[in-house]
Length: 443
Ligand code: GDP
Image (tube, rainbow, N blue to C red; front, side):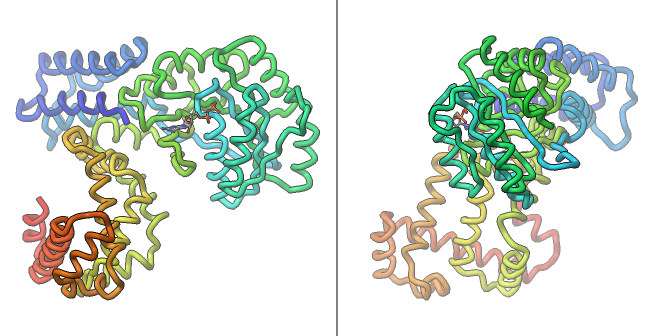
């Protein structure tokens, strides 16, 4: 996500380190470089202008803050300004005081509207809400089947249009009845999309909006479309009214221009972002966390929350106890790999770890993911006894494990060596409890 912009900004910050305090000339040069970086990221001109003006007001003529280097001061102010243009505060979907809360999903075909409808349904289901999905996209017939399949996957009922339904508004009485029967609290309506904005689409959406009086009209836009996405959003807002935006495909967006521009151009908040095709890849949008990721400072908060969902407190404590006694075995190792994979791809994880974003360009993520898969396969090919006591694994067993996992004996040797080293490091770390020795081992 946003690799090219993050890379540029990190380059600018790096150049500043070691150049001492902020002189007027240095601030001027830095502002110009940031302006170019934002333009290259496809941020809209107006937004670039107000960003650099805001930043300039924060930096020019400002006394050097005590305890901060010039570079740190610039990073802090860029972060503040970035949080500001992303909307300052988190915007959520407030549920209606009287159920149901009706949410419209609007957007062009291919934007990710149907997928996002299902992701959002899963989000509310996770909050123990009774959710109904409504397949009202009659413009793309495959969308109805798609929603049906997605609903089955996440265990959320989907109201399908009866055969022969031609007008989406004909579904409304059925929805009303189902909502009362099922006591649904949240109703997510997948409205029609078209390849381009046209008057037929807008007419249909206006009619539906009048009928349903939705609490939230969410616009789903594909972040990878850049400024075009911002233009589409403007039209939807002028014609129908938009309460919030969901950006999809942020995982593939290297530039970030649309995400950085939309708040100021549309004056409407970003509420969620899609970070992948899978249904659990929807994230609530926090301007401060996103700003931190964009400037290469990671997002530890989101990482911790995700980890909490994946690893239970008991599991974490059991592992810590084993590590304390230096009893970690290959099963624990496997469990750690699997937990990490549940949190996200390595690519995702690197984006959330402070300072690791710049490493991403240097590491081949594909190779790393393949390596993890290989390690998993090797551990799967071991017996329970072998996993608990790797010292048992002699030459013959190594051959069998290599055959079973489609790897080579050298690769099995390497895994066992690495595991042994990790165990030994842990032992030394536990013996010399001082923090200094730990720090020297993990620079
Ligand atoms: P619709 O025509 O707007 O309903 O679009 P779909 O929901 O069918 O999505 C179009 C394509 O985008 C599908 O292949 C989805 O899997 C994919 N997609 C949706 N959201 C995301 C996302 O956040 N990241 C990625 N990588 N793909 C997404």
